[in-house]
Length: 190
Image (cartoon, one colour):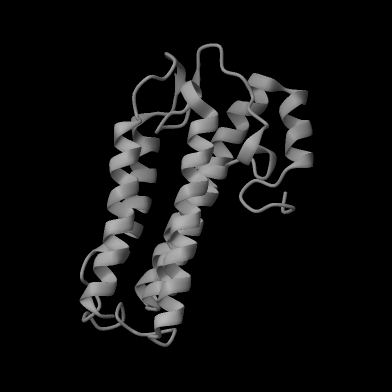
């Protein structure tokens, strides 16, 4: 992959990251939060995924193996998917508002949000990140990108399992009904 193409991918992720950090304040007080060891597992898996796509590993044997041809149209399609995924995550975070947390947490007075992207999937922030990673994989076309997608999906499936347990405890039948009506990461896949 040409360096200029990789820089475009890095730029998109960097702009998203800067926005994400800038918007991290102004949330409700946390009532229940995941343990530090649980958080470390998520950070290790997602950190490894991001290292695979962002570090210059193209010349490392195996990681640099091409799975897709290096064409401008595939790169543009991948970047478009990346941008749409991250925009979807931003939309979800804005809709979640003061109930958002970077960790698995329930906020004091937590409400169940079912509008906007939450009417499409139950965990739209995760869907957006995975979609962004898939877009990056398409744009890069290398085995390292596919490995990054697998790691990120594994990380979020683990997180979803924990969150869903807490949300059922918090919201009971209201959340169980939501689970039956809306897919977790992919619409129509419950």
